[in-house]
Image (cartoon, rainbow, N blue to C red; front, side):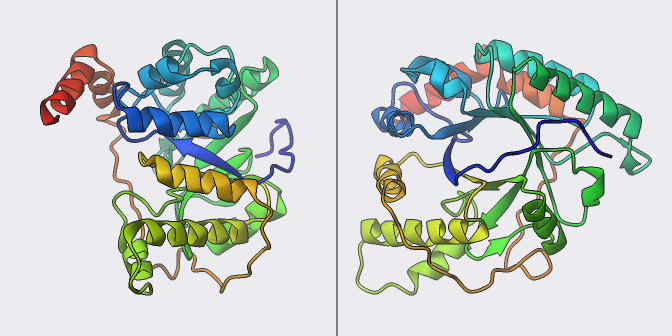
Length: 309
């Protein structure tokens, strides 16, 4: 299925500050991280499903209009009605007239385990409408190995996936088609992932007599070299951290002219040390979304944070 979307133009490799964790508007370190991201004109990645994220984003932004133009919001795309609901709620909750784009998580409308083409066409048409109205510039889809044929999903501008030194959780044939079509790569978990520490731990074993700060810097260098070898341009790499020293160091690295370092070949989905899998239920998603967006849920989260102080 082909589309009439705007063709993706080459995009320099850029960092995206991920806001998947809870960010506390009263926490000075959290605020400092956001200020570093804003100062360095980083992109942002968030969702209405991340508790407190929109409140933090709206409260801390000093130049929200500029931030909005680089904001990517994750939404559901497993049905047209749910997609419309989450788009409307996202625009309202983040107070947006425009943003960079929407990223659909890895499920599409199905009918008897096959893509529901009629429903999908409704989704594509609405996203195209938002582009024509200049509400968004790009669309992204989170792709998992062995799930869809690339020809079924080739209308998106970019594709999100998990990537760790030195593994891409993508089918190699999909990766090559994305590169050939000059689509955007949206790499998740740039710093190695909150729950996936095996790559960092393996790296740490190679370092001798170094403190945590020095190891952190070497690891960030390793991650950046990996990302730059995935693609020399057209890659947005998403990282979530609440340690300002990490973000500050990365910002300094990105501001420097660096020689390209060729790495060994990386692994694809057929040869992974670890695969991050998602078993998130579409049936339970609406009730979960309602719960985590409630004022009472957010109040409880803040109360827990204050009680720990």
